[in-house]
Image (tube, rainbow, N blue to C red; front, side, top):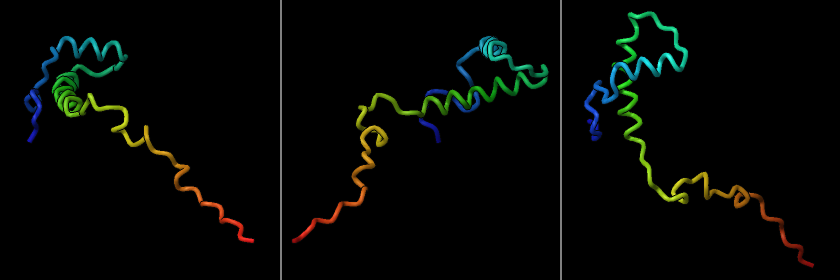
Length: 79
């Protein structure tokens, strides 16, 4: 169950705006497919709405991970 404000399959973006997006992206679709893309766009918007934002930079492991921590430690010379 989604906790987003976009109902399943519905898109708050107008069909005309989606047609403009398709034209600007130079998608050459037969007219029969355009209504399917318009419905699918609602699902894309729901997925995008679920992406969390506003986290601090350190919350992303890739920004704080230091692979050097896993390098072998040179053995100390005793002698």
